[in-house]
Length: 313
Image (tube, rainbow, N blue to C red):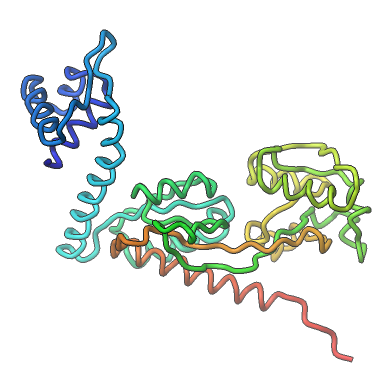
């Protein structure tokens, strides 16, 4: 089984016909047919059946597809590592991230990384934890930074980036509610809320707090799936919402947004970098992860220095 054969197999699968695949690959169709037949002999069975609508993968072909993609990614990764060794500074790293990291940590990490390694290509894939884990497993991502942990999964390993990051209630600084103390869950239940859509995990956690307190669920005056748009709306309205503190720390430090302390809503979150257990990361990925860790360390120091100090009697 040769890498070329696997690339041709995937081209047939994606194009749905031998002729279209041959055009994409820039080879003659008879040569592609011979290559497919050779691969099928090696595999020990038919990978496609011919139908009026084109080439349809058999069960054997569907089984081969994910493995073929992983094999070819690992070959590309090996080529990349060899280029890094030969050229010293070239390479490519692909990282997945949730919205909190994309907003607060990665921009600083990318700036530091590019300053040190300007010839290494950096690709960022945005997504939530359930979307990122499969991409780490199949090699599409070098690693992912997210607030879920799949370390119990035998295929994955990882390391802590930030621990016990709280979820906080946030509003604009001019909201009169920010001047009150000892606010209770009963008081905020009647305030106007801007919430994530119902399918978001944060929305379910929010509603569970009121269910446990035997209070009616607040009816949101607005629902929005975009965390970045939510922040813009907050700047112009006396309205409450929930954020991971990591995502609004810059605005809190600038005094644009303020938090409202209600103990029932301060859920701690742990952020991890996750990657495949038995596949070593490329040198480029290791260096980028090191920059992310450095930015996380800086963030922890900032938060610690800004924390209110206990009053001396």
